[in-house]
Length: 313
Image 1 (cartoon, rainbow, N blue to C red):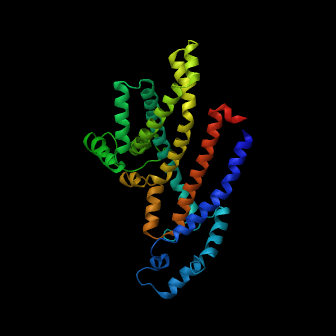
Image 2: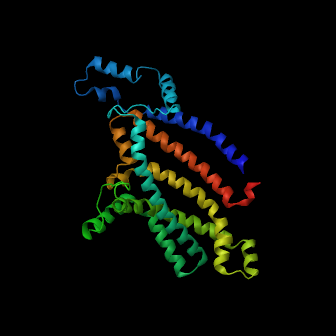
């Protein structure tokens, strides 16, 4: 088990290096000159030249990458050209918001998706199976921005139960934070729940038709124990991978939802940075999300080992 984890961790080094090269290289494809944006309306040539020297924009791209990589390895992600603040501070201020939103969305998706998938597989071919599949398909097909607007219209405008937008830190007001994040979390978790449901159902159907499940039933074990202890445990293996990947997607792909509900997370930060040609912020946010994505894959591999004893040898 430990050798497998060590092997996976060693594979992270070249992966993260390639990711860093891609992030820095693709960043150069953004249109516009950040020095011109920062120079203001007057666009004084001396000011532009000074800005280029200050941020090493006058250096060749490989040299810029080396300086950037050295800073990243020491925890320095650069400085925001627009806000004049360290990118690491901006990331640390927005990361808890996005983590809270992603965690709540993932919890909602797991509760709905896994439960619905198991129920659909156990009662396959029945009306309940059909209803669950239709609901899952609706969840996958519904656009996040439309669902978000409809939920705001229903729960905030008509019923007045929840705020339409904004964010409150859970450290300031736990229930207030829950009220401001439950709608965007449900919007994000809704589509993932549909995907998890379909994968869980497929994995459960294979597990329920396997020999070891038939043997467990032949021994006279109760059906709930057969489903939960024998079938569900083995069916969770592909769901673990999917859940880890979807959580990584939540960290980087909640841009529209955060904009609709005015959540000050990674989504708003990176959108503002792209519009203002703030290269350092874009690079920092993308690097953090990409690194998190890779680490989540490592956690998925560890989860494989914990769930499937055959991989521990």
